[in-house]
Amino acid sequence: MFRILDVHEDGLSVVCAGLANVAPPAAGDIRWIDLVEQDADKLRVLAERFRFHPLAIEDCLHFDQRPKLESYSDHMFLVIHGFRVNGDKALTSAAVELHIFLGHGFLVTVHESPLPELDAVWNRLAQDGSLLRRGADYVCYLIADALIDGYFPVVDGIMAKIDQLEDRVLDVSEEVNLQEILDLKRLLVEMRRVLSPQRDVLALLAKHGEGWIEEHTAIYFRDVYDHVLRLHETVESAREMVANTRDAYLWSASQRTNEIMKRLTILSAIFLPLTFLTGFFGQNFEDMPFGNYGLMIGMLVSCILVPAGMIYYFVKSKWFV
Image (cartoon, rainbow, N blue to C red):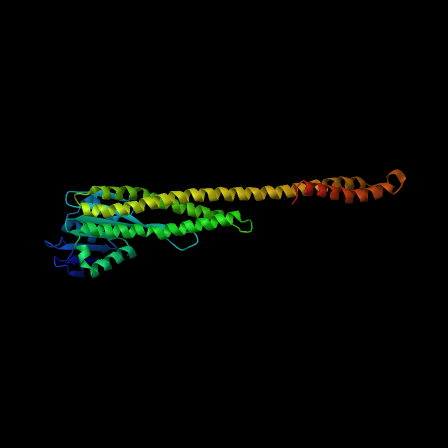
């Protein structure tokens, strides 16, 4: 579906839809064309009317591109990503891919599904046409800024979950599943895989200052680039925290295993002399050894005193607490 937002020289905003207005804007106008749920036919219309490069059109057919920036003779092609985390227990995630064509007086966005961040920018420009009059490159900045700002709630949620996991790992009464730690680690790896190339792309936009990005707009892109740097550093810190949490979990599990083995060893040591005594006197005798019951009484007393003495020794040595 195509939707078109035009802003005329007088600042009047006009919103329409359909193929009729999918074309470069009239002189003095600024046009934003948004395409949702692209297919080969719709992309062919864009290629014919805007003469976009075939390689860029091919990239729009398959949404599996890394963040990148390609500059052609009459337009610029930009791929940027947002990020979504589902609310399920496994913390499944997906990068939200947006393709942008930027040219003189126009901006074309292509995406597979509706994007709340992009819709918010669209509604804002539809109400205030003066923002779109600042240039198509400024609209590109607004979209990039909205997508990048969408990372912060995700990162804040991840950091809060890591803090909770650390507390649970160190609390012996809490049970922690190793899968929770691995899910967080996988999520951070996916986020880093997106943020690393996106940082480079925004660095180019921030330093461009000519061509498709005007100098006054490049300043705004520098702010977005600063946000990406902060996000990247936070993700790197979160990865270290997850690694430390995993090490703490493995150490805690090892300590619990050692504690169990220690207790079992102490119990075995206590029952070892009892096993010897009962085994020795459990033999089949016609008469008790030495012809009296003195040894029998001594055996019974030993079965009481020996374990009691060993337990006292272990407790005093703080081996058994």
